[in-house]
Image 1 (cartoon, one colour):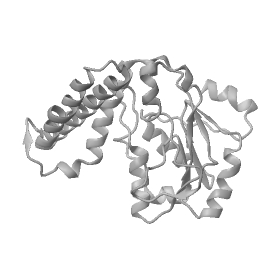
Image 2 (cartoon, one colour):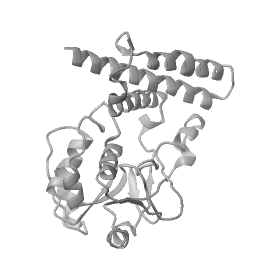
Image 3 (spheres, helix red, strand yellow):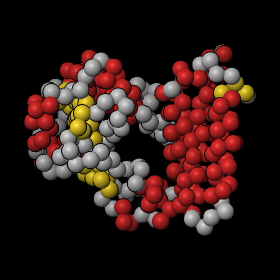
Image 4 (cartoon, helix red, strand yellow):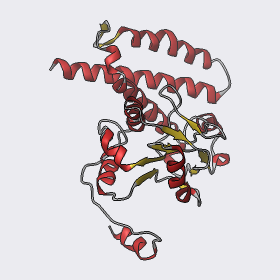
Length: 265
């Protein structure tokens, strides 16, 4: 509250403070949606810098396209300062570029990222809140809440548009983001998220040690073999990427066993 109080004095817009006692990104977003009174809602992440013309472009793009959700590219601001092993990962994480032309995104296209999304508030309220099982919460790095939201928009026939003029820049400023420990944990939770979002697919799967047999097969026959082959090379970046694939598979197995145990109880 004291930070908001200091900012409020010189802030160019009306700034209101709302306290959300439940920890987690999805809880925070849902509270923001309920508190907001404007026609549009714009989301960005705390490690991003918004383009100076971003907000001025939001309303005209909504009016021109008739979209319910819009977003744009996210570029790295300091990618040249990253260690060598992190450079390949930075091309996948932290930046999103779907081209230099405006396009309507279908259900099978790459989705917008949560760090750069804007909604018609009325449509967002109609679709429902962000899934609080997903999204960052404390030390847990679950994700996918923005993908789940966009899937619901598609299911209701609401238009989602990517516009190259809605630019934000992402920073890798936190020291922990430059550690391998962070990325191992990130991929472990990515696996948990992936299983949670596709759990129905595995409902009738044959299980070994409470996890679908196919997941064990992928872990040992595919990901482990790829990792072992990568260990014979001197390319540390490729080797680490193969290791992260193992962590993602382990995360899927963990979540499948966890969910199956809860269901049995």
